[in-house]
Length: 308
Image (cartoon, rainbow, N blue to C red; front, side):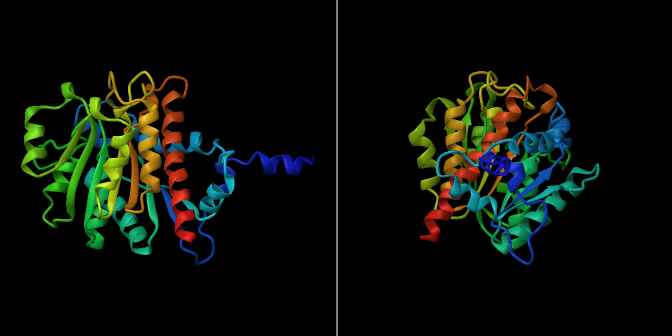
């Protein structure tokens, strides 16, 4: 076996994902980094999630396309473009506007945005992309928290994105589902908000493989999927903005990401709240990277099915 053959057999995602658009072709999916954690600061969390996108990429690009049916993933990766990190300033609301412009342009082209956060304020900028395109969407959030807190003095933060989305004057949000809630982290007022606005919620103790499949299958409208990695037990994900004891298992978390990729209603994805400053030996970075990989794996299967 020649050296070139050996290299070909050991390809990594970093070798396969394009950093530049290929000609006039429209990518099937695109990676977008949103290095902002001002919302975490406002919410009195642990700053550092702004470093998340670059750390996720570093870990993601070391992964292989997979030893099982690699061609399926290779086909997707050939149509995946990495836009790098957005150029942001100090103003969170302006940063969210910048993200919304990027998301809107890709949704219009039929490209699936895969957004690497950042604090959970990422998701409101993500949602505003749907507002700009006048596309109704159902939000599915995998999270230990509801993130429906009211704005403070008219300003949002990492705990407000879905309050802002549900109450947005555009009525773009068709519904909000949050899965993985921890009872000790949810205030009565949060549940009151969810009930008052016909939102769906699933407590962590009720989450199972069947639940993961059922969450997506019950929604017939386009879905914006958001994954807050603090939903995972802190033993497996210590490097997050707000660690969670007794959180979701990596198995259920990764299954949720894979099923999001497979579901044809899922039009966009974000991964938020990974904080490299508090990681342990790259443990959370690898889980975050595998979360994106699992979504891509599911998306590759979706595209293969659509092509037949």
